[in-house]
Length: 349
Image 1 (cartoon, rainbow, N blue to C red):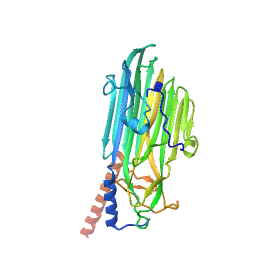
Image 2: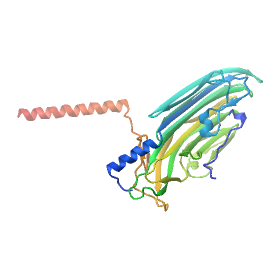
Image 3: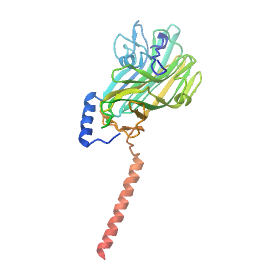
């Protein structure tokens, strides 16, 4: 077992390459598409209230893919046990998939009146996901105080590495994800980020995780180039780094499914908590190796979603800013007018 295949569960106090012919490539694309439905998924949870219910739970998505960490919700009804707040999941076959929510509330606990407010957001497209939660709390709650703000985002996509020479042979793939963001906690609250992945229906691996709990910060993996990109203090963690999956077994010409997701939560207690990883958890590189472990430089990947993946990770089409599009349109119009003037002058002579 390595740094990537653990699940850190919060205690109850946290509240829980050869070119193929077009016909063969098309057949492989159809096989990849039918191997598993590509899907995007988001979850936002924001709650602030005093509960008298004794049983608490985590959202099913969090239990299934992230190990049950985060905000513990009263299980006596939805969205959050009758308390002020939101618990909402979304799925889609195409992206971007976006969601955001907020909540504010107050209660009277063992230590007297308290109040809290905050928000969360999630975003997902194939090859890139983000999540964030942030909130603050005035005064102390107790064991029945539910105040927390969290979000998760995932993508699942089938991938096929076609190779006319190696089809049917085993190889391996290592994926590289660039993750950037920050955690900050003032007071005895908690904040965390998890980045997890899974191949097919196999075990869930933790690619990277960072957390702050009551003035104690943890980060995993503890060493490596990805860890070196982060600055860790008892009350804050911030930076950016590239984190690598374990070598995933692949069979050339046969689709496999990759699921990757991030989960961020903030649980304030007499202060503020923030987990800001909404900007980037991006697939920025893929290495493919043959059965002998030799790298293959010239490879292609056919995906169920139709997304283009390659050696540089996912290729995300850039959308021009409105001002850029306007300038481009103005320039094209000017060029067309000049061409017409030249054509008119030539015709006149």
